[in-house]
Amino acid sequence: MEKKNIDWAKLGFGYTKTDSRWQAEWKDGEWQEGGLIEDAEFHLPESACVFHYSQSCFEGLKAYTTKQGDIVTFRPDLNAERMANTCRRLAMPAYPQDEFVRAVVETVRANAAWVPPYGTGCSLYIRPVMIGSGPQIGVAPAPSYMFRVFVMPVGAYFKGAVKPLKLRVSEYDRAAPHGTGHIKAGLNYAMSLYATMEAHEEGYAENVYLDPATRTYIEETGGANIIFVDADNTVVVPKSPSILPSITRRSLVYVAEHYLGLKVVERQVALDELKGFKECALCGTAAVLAPVGQIDTKDGPIQFPSGMEKMGEISARLRETLTGIQMGEIEAPEGWIVKIA
Image (cartoon, rainbow, N blue to C red; front, side):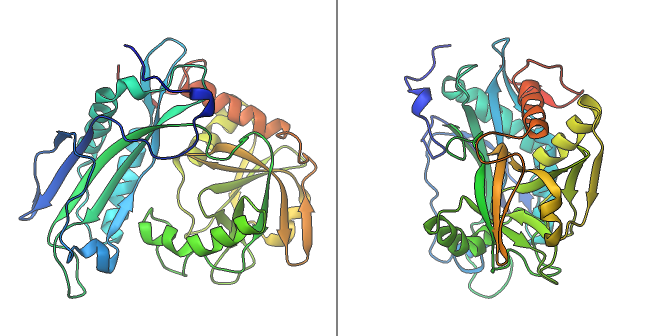
């Protein structure tokens, strides 16, 4: 198949309108049959619940062209499961998980010409989204919902993603105790935007958020989970009920243990432990794994021994192995890769 005429080397992480998207509607107490459409616009009444009470959630995953020339996607069943969990927390009807995977596959297949070629370092980003589309002025769930999957070709989330980033510990909270930090709700990201823009203005790539109850434990950043490597090469993963369960993080944990033979510990990580780690990295669908060289705290900057010039050894091995699995260069665990075309 002939690919779109795109300068892949200059592609950033942003929206590009592609040919087709999947849409389905929930009304009268059930999901209607979904299908592919060409209209890239939502058509909603001014009274739509999403505008007033923020009933919205989304997912993010990617499709790739492998070394063998196949178009594949990575663990879409886990995205389907996570979105279903999010919907339940937001009093929204979960889209059937098998239909979610079908929608992803059909949307990518319909936009195959937009999937970047192997070796470009780019991918096709897949964005499933659900909103409360029906009219609702009283404080209550919407009477109807819209589910959509759309896609776009993207480059790296962070410019120069393998060059270490500088972060800061935020004075703001990302989530409330017993709140919605563990689900992928649009409202969580709206809460972080002011702090994110402030961080960017001050020269930081991202904020590090602390636990909302005691503000002593590290949780995650505004758009990605965070992991550490200690002096013994143990991968340390922060654990908290208000951290979003990243599919990339879950996959990296498996890679660390089963491919690289590393020890992994998931536990609470105190802020005052930062100086004891030799590597730090952000992980998520968009970033995959991006190294962190420095985190600024109110008591001063903390620089990791891995430095600001290159990715640490363990982080590099984790990234190379996971991307190798995604690109068909390394054999994947059963069920991780779904072939589309």
